[in-house]
Each structure stands twice: as C-alpha cells, then as structure tokens.
Amino acid sequence: MREFLEVYEENQEKIDYFIQESLKNIGKLSAHKKLNFTQLFNLFPSLELVYIVDSNTKCQISEDIYKYKADSKGKDKDRSHLISKLELKNNHMAFSKPYISSATRNNCITVSIKEDDEIIFLDFRLDILLEKLNLIELHKPFHSITKAFYLFVGFSMIALATITIIFSLYDFVVYLFKNQDIKLESMFKPIIALTLGMAIFDLAKTILEQEVFFKSYAKNSKIETKMITKFLITIIIALSIEALIVVFKIAINGYDQMINALYLITGVSIILVALAIFIYFAKKKK
Image (tube, rainbow, N blue to C red; front, top):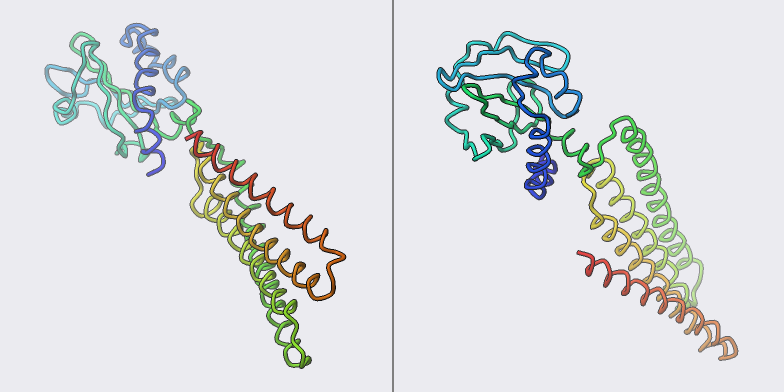
C-alpha cells in the first residue's frame, strides 16, 4: 500500500487531470443512471463503486452500484460526513485522498461530481488505476511465477556462496596443517573465494529483497542500478586481488610473464572506467 500511495502522490496532478478530462468527455453522468453506469465501468476498469447523494438532504438516494451487481444496504444512509469534507472546484468536481473503502476493503480514491441537486460519488481502485495508467507493473499470475523462480534462484545462490566460503576456508586450513612453507599466493586464494562468495550472497540477498519479500511494482531503475553497481564493485575487488597475486608470482619467478599481469590490470582498469561512466550517466538521468 505504501508504494501505491507514493506513486499516486508523485503523479497526483496527472492522474486527477486524466480522470477529470475523461469524465468531461462523457457528458452528464446522470444520463447513465438507467443502465447502472455500465458505460463508465467499461471505460474505467479501475472504477469499482458508484452511488448518488442528494445535496440537500445529504442522504444517499441510490443503491451501491458495482460493475456486476447493486447493493441496497447504503441507500437512505446519511452521508453528511462525506459532503462536509468535499471541496468542490469550479467544475463541480472534487478528489479525495487515498483511503481504504469500507464497502470493498480496497485502497481507493473517490471522485465527487455535483450535477443539479445530486452528488455522484465514483470510487476508483488505486492499484488498478495506477496500473492502467502505466505507472506500476501489476500482473499477478506472471508475478507469482517470477516470484517462485527468483525465490529458487536466490536461495540456490546463497547455498552456493556458503559452500564456496566453507570450502575455501577448509582448503586453507588443510593447507596450513599439511605444509610447513606457507606461500603468499596461498594466503590470497581464500580471500578471493571469500570476496566472490560475498558478492554472490549480496546479489542473492538483493534479488530476494526486491523480487520476493519486498517486491516493487513501481517502474524505478534505481534498484537495478544499485544492484549492478554493488556486484561490479565486488568483482573488481576480486580481480584486483588476483592481479596482485599474479604480480607477486612474476616478481618471484622472473619478469618474463609480466605482460600477462599488465593485461589483467588493464582489464580491471577498463571495467573500473566502465563502472564510473555507468554511475555518472545513472546519476545524470535522475
């Protein structure tokens, strides 16, 4: 719900303008009473409830009209508390703030339109409204499949990261007990494995957070940028350590293969420059 409210608040003016102009093009809404506002329900998939209140008596004079049914429970009820909150503009139209509907239990906004002595209340379901305006991506069957897939992949990556870390530590401990002469190269290998394990775990954690447990429906590239940046930084650290090991080995054994170390360091530098350019354009886009 919080995410829907944030998206709505960011785009409130555009959403209100869209609804306002769409309703203006329809003409008088009271002309659709005979057909229980069928045309409105077909035009607005997010519209879930319509009812009419007399502006003089402040009582509801119609049933609660839904897309496929009508309920008489709300008829003749006093709606003065609703009318007192209305701030009708010059076009005799008012928009409420998002709230949870007592009739449908959904998050919605209410549009009120005054026509003669009647005030027509239109309840729009917030999540569907945002989806139809292409402000959020909400496709429940598809998201259920992707959620299950990301759940499997995320925990598999965590398992592999854990195995990588445990194996590297085990291999290092065995090496310490079996060998008396400890080489510098052998000290760096578990560090590389630990760094890569951490990178894989961090990536898995981000996937599970953003795609499973705290799924974001808003179209926002900040999350993807953050995830790519964190992962690439960890990979750069691992490659830098590997390049350092290669330099040490060449320095000990001879400088004939120094060109290979240069290639590796150059490759790391290119990745680092590419990451810097990526971060620059990502921030510039914001």
